Structure formats: C-alpha cells, structure tokens
Image (cartoon, rainbow, N blue to C red):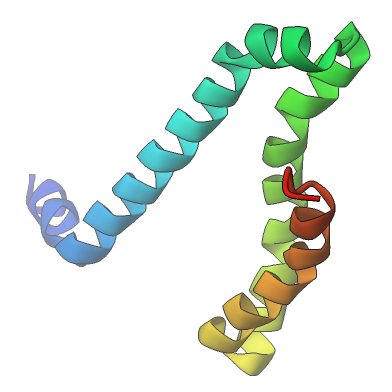
Length: 100
C-alpha cells in the first residue's frame, strides 16, 4: 500500500495534465480526419488507396518523426528542435495551400 501512495504522489500534475491534453487533442484531430474522409474523398474524387494514405500519413509521420526529433532535442535542446521542425514542414504546407 505504501508503494501505491508513493506512485500516486509521483509526477508533476501540470505536466501530466498537459500531456493528457496533447494526447486528447491529437486523438481528436486523427478521429476527425478519419470521420471526414468520405466527405473529403467525395470533394476531391479520391480512390480508396488515396483515402487510406490521407488517413494514415499524420499518424505515421508522428510515429516516424518522434525518434529523430527526440535525439535532435537531446543535442540542441527542445525549443531549438521545435523551431527547426517548423521550416521543415513549411514547403509541404505551401504546396498544399488552397491559395495558389
């Protein structure tokens, strides 16, 4: 029982709450992406393979980039790694922009 009390007192509550909010928000975005798949595919005339790619790319990108960004953040710091990530994604954001 003493171990259970120590376990419940461990951790930093604001950090745990922030991690929960991050997980919850990310999951909501992925669910919305999947739920809106039929409407998006109808609008853009996507075939089933393209729909699968559309739904899976955000999840796979997050999974594959987690390790390299973790290693990078150990060497240059979390803030600098996050700042370096923004320009890396900008070309794809500009290419996919509806305002071309």
